[in-house]
Length: 194
Image 1 (cartoon, rainbow, N blue to C red):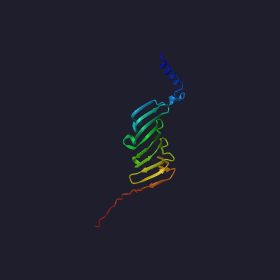
Image 2: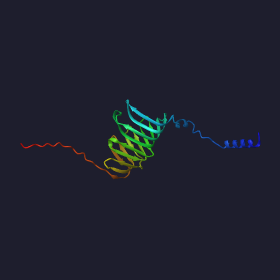
Image 3: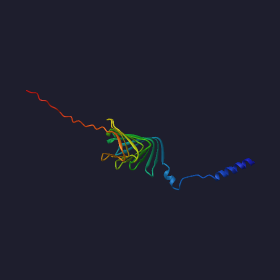
Image 4: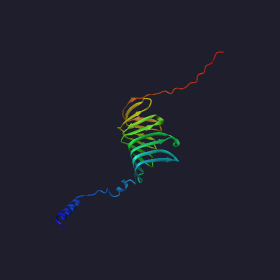
């Protein structure tokens, strides 16, 4: 072996002796690795043979032990009764879906449209608790709300209880709220003089 090859071998061995490889903590690397990674995915959630929601994402990672699915560049549609029509739709940069509970955390720019309520919500993050039927933003997050009738306002820290149909903010809210009275159509009858 020539001198140059011996020197290179010694330099390589010294370099390797100074390196460390991080394989993760014992036992935790198995938990953190996804069981399934998919690209350009469509996932349909079904209950009692009817679709209740459809998710689409550019990338999805499924973690079986945690019952979790992580989604990138996420969009969704929620169906009404018997899966007949879309009631709500939205999108977010990222989302985490708890497969067992149906809870969803969305962030990195969230837009939510609820057709039955004629409302659009835009904010940085939203957290949906399925069993409690609660929707919330971060406590200090700015939330923009729009309706077709001209209602448009911004508030800080949104909490919506969909069962009780209540909306509240943890901070100030400013903007325009348009209230439309429903007109009762009254039948009128006229009698002709005889």
